[in-house]
Image 1 (tube, rainbow, N blue to C red):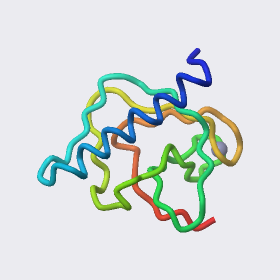
Image 2: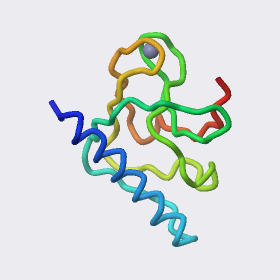
Image 3: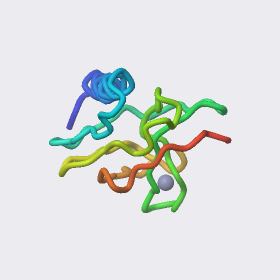
Amino acid sequence: MASGDQKQKNVTAVQAMLSVLKANPGTNAAPLKDTYSLAKASPERGRWYFVATCSGCKRDTPLFEDTTGGSVGNPFTGSGGFRVPCYHCGKEVRASPGDVQPVLWQL
Ligand SMILES: [Zn+2]
């Protein structure tokens, strides 16, 4: 089990990947080799987040902030993924790269 500190570091790491993408137009893939356990997001209305659908409550739950503002679509590829507690029901959400989408948070 990843510690809380490590989960926060993982959020920082994936956001660093996004910064690289943003700084290098034409590079639009972020391959994931590992599964990142992430700290639970605290989304704010009007900001962009990568989300995945929770298998428990079937709602979209935020994984982490999309600091590109939706401009890179879903850049994640590879055999890794993300794990995060569902924002709505608390169940652990496991997301493969193909499950992720950028959403403007409206709640
Ligand atoms: Zn849920």
